[in-house]
Amino acid sequence: MHAAHGYLLHSFLSPASNKRTDNYGGSFENRVRFPLEVIDAVREVWPDELPVFLRVSTTDWIEEDPSVDRAGWTVDETVRFSRLALEHGIDLIDCSSGGLEPAPIPRNRDYQTRYAARVRAEIDAPVAAVGRITDPHWAAELIGDETVDAIFLGRALLRDPSWVNAAAASTGERPRFVEQYDYAL
Image 1 (cartoon, rainbow, N blue to C red):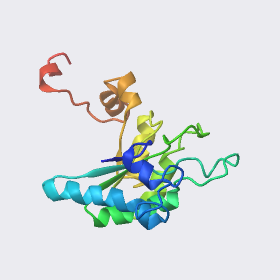
Image 2 (image 1 turned 90 degrees about the vertical axis):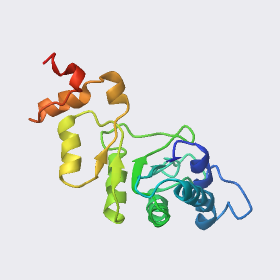
Image 3 (image 1 turned 45 degrees about the vertical axis):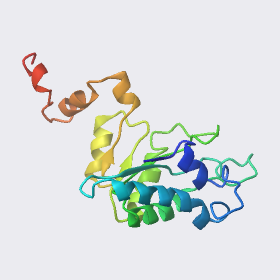
């Protein structure tokens, strides 16, 4: 489920976009109401043995911008919401960030993974990290030291569809190819 990057569920979560004055706006409890109802609706029809992942923007980056005189979604709220989402049947929290509106975003390597690590440290459930993960050794480190439970890649795989096999080779693992391509080795 996608509750990040300014999509519908994220727009309910963030106080920067949710200006409602009914039971779906204002307080944290009201802003998470609709996303939790959607999770419940999905879980009602989705088989119990199949997982449901929830992507969240851990921060809108708005609260970190002193030039903006309003609040955005925060990592503290992400932790609170993640706990509730788990109670409603989510199996993994996928931690991304931003996307609601233009905001200054750090360009350092761990600009998102540090928030995924914080969520992982504070909830009792699997957490995935994303964002600027291009070094296979760093990805292995994030998993190996249990900073996070999974790494999700997007742009790295778009740039290099063989990234996973190259990463395996560079970390001493055996690359795995689909059977149809195995003869080319």
